[in-house]
Image (cartoon, rainbow, N blue to C red):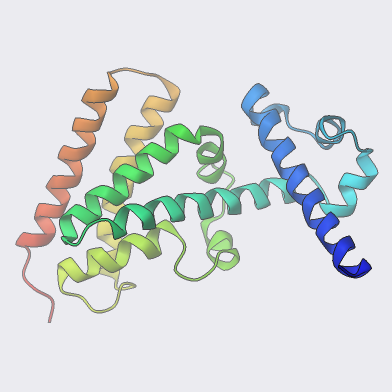
Amino acid sequence: MGSKERIHRLKEQTRVNILDAAHEIVKDEGWQALSMRKIADKIEYTAPIIYEYYANKEAILLELTKKGFMLLGARMNEAKTKHKELGDQIEAMWLAYWNFAFEQKEYYQLMFGVEVNCCIMDELLPAGSTPYDIAASTIAEMMGISDPDDDRVCTKYYTYWSIVHGLISINIVRKGTSDEINRQILKDAITGITRSLRNQPQAE
C-alpha cells in the first residue's frame, strides 16, 4: 500500500471515529450535549484536529443525518424486496420505517427534527435512496401512475408518512400504549390508505 493510500485510509477512519464518537455521546447524553470538545475528548484527540475534518458541529450533524437516511433507506429497501405483492411491500416498508425509528431513536430524532431541511438531504443523498424514492415507485404502480414524482403519488406518500411519523412521535415522547397495540394501530392505518389506492379509478 502506497503512502498516499495509507494516509487517505487513516483520514477516512478518523472521520468514522469522529462520527461514531458523536453518536455515542448522543446516546448517553442527548443531542443537546454534543460539542466538538466532547467529541475530541471521547477519541482522545485535540479539538483543532476535529476541526480539520468538520468545520463545526453543524457539519457533523449533517453528516450523521445523511448516514441516518442511508440506514433507513437500506432497511426499507430490504423489507420491500422480500415481497412481490404491492400491498405487502407497502406495509413491510412502513413497518421497517417504524422499527428503525425506535431502534435508532437518536438518528431518527436528528433526521426529522425541526432544523432538518429535506431539500438539502435530497441533494446530498444518492438518487433513489430517500424514503420517498423507495416507497413512491410502489405507490405509483398501485395507483396506475407511471411517474413516481406525480403530485398524486406525493400526496399519498405524505398521507402514509404523516400517520406513521405522528404515531412514532407520540410514542418517542410518551409511551401511552403497548407495543402490540401501537403496531396494530399502525397496520390498520396503512391498510386503510392502501385500500384507498386500490379502490380509486386507474390513472390515464
